[in-house]
Length: 63
Image: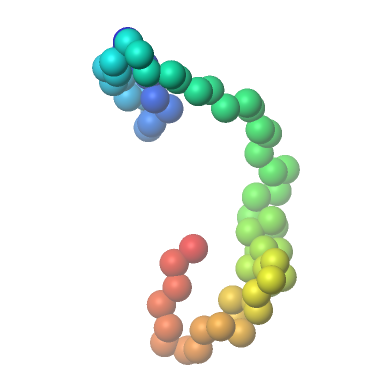
């Protein structure tokens, strides 16, 4: 079975055994203002102190 995975601009074609089950997720619309949502999540995270309270000058953070 040939399947196209959503990867990059054109996808990635792969071959899978015919007995493989392929699950397709339902569509979920993106957030209307992603930058604002990210900033809000960093400032008021769920069950955690804000990122600004967890790091000190010179720390490296990856989001």
